[in-house]
Length: 382
Image (cartoon, rainbow, N blue to C red; front, side, top):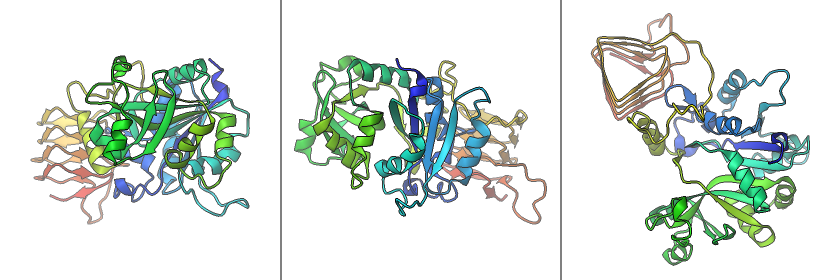
């Protein structure tokens, strides 16, 4: 293993986040709240820290103020550490007056900041996925195979092929073909891997396709060469298919919980799944903690309530209510005689002292809420 100072992590913050709108109306995609007290950006950054990677850049373009504030308050490595988490917002320069045009273009325009100090490997991550991964294992496999590029892949069903980048992987793990969101059934059948070869990695007859997770590990010189052509704007559509002709590209199979929560429906489902007795993603895993901003809030005060299969975050005030299969975020105020079912309440950024004639932040008394997402600082009257 190389020293972790030779590895840089880059988290792609995404564009306008239209699939998550209106949750991205006032914030960037990585800043969207998750699980009552976290943000989406906490997932890839925590995975990096737990894997020993402490030089991390987050690329963002839209509504970055909330994300900047969260990162500045959360990720401080100390005076005697080389670790950092830096926001790199899109900027106009003498070389380029355009904003980010795609994932590859975002990394290309940021290399002037990323490559200030020489690094050997660059790990590229997405900011809107929920999973827990030890990137050190990816790096070890990358070095053992003498790979130029490693793509993290996950087995998926045939029906999901049009939603992913699907690749053809040989028995030695080498990738020879890559198609972004294929829809032709004949092509999809040709991309199926040998189930018996990879059965110990979660590949089954029901999941015979290898899908890209949007996680790429590059040798730094290969990344620079791959991004030299400015017409290549996206990793999945342009960079990776072209790299297959010139470089050794391998797949790293991940057989754990992974969810792309870039849409409202996926976001809603992923949050409610956290309320299960045995959630597929477990925030209580002591071996891979997820870090976030320490807020020093008081414990929640709950009086005369019925709470079933739910998450109640700190700092909440809940009275005489029924809550079932819901996630209640920090500083939530829920009035008496309220029923909250299959819902996600993101909470509040502050305690409101005076309402000045407005409906108070929180859920008013006597409310019935089912199957809903209430954004931060929402006001629901009586």
